[in-house]
Amino acid sequence: MTRTEDEIAGLVLAAGGGRRLGGRPKALLAHRGRPLVEHAAGTLRAAGCERVHVVVGARSAEVRRRTDLAGCVLVENPHWEQGMGSSLRAGLDSLAGTGARAAVVLLVDQPGVSAEAVARVRAAYRDEGSLVSAAYGGVRGHPVLLGAAHWGGVAASATGDRGARAYLRAHDGSITLVECGDVAQAYDIDTEADLGHLE
Image 1 (cartoon, rainbow, N blue to C red):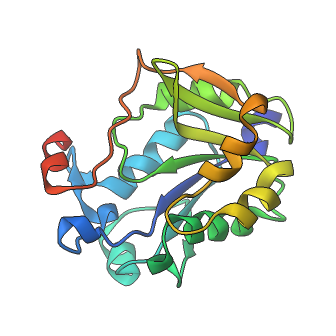
Image 2 (tube, rainbow, N blue to C red):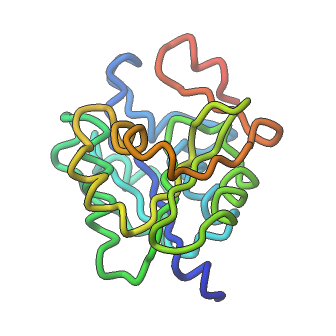
């Protein structure tokens, strides 16, 4: 394992209840024959993340039972109904003390984000002060790499469904943008209409 592989963890946020999808947790939606949460964890692993933490919440017992996340650390977010911010806080907290110096954050409902996009974002990591974001046509998107020096600030500002958005906006000048529009698509699976993106 190289130094960088050991230092950059993967973090999947997969705790949401799919409110706009009739209460179907996004983690369990099928894509290419497997649940979205397996797809996301596999994307991070294929990009070189040796350590992958997966934050679960809605129907977590069912998610654990119906998915194969062997080798991943499953992190329970009992406050998942409060929004994505609570999942990001839980995930970053779970990485404290592991030796990880950065986390690549991937949302479970963005299956169009490829391993190549994640690898490009990882490659821009320099140190614990790194902030890196994929960009699509120059517009910031996911995945996002958060150096450990930023975890406390991100956690403090992560409320509701905003995740790291407020923190990143406040530190816009420090973010390295990595264009990924040629190798990934940044759509979300949020509504019934979005289900057409799944295969």
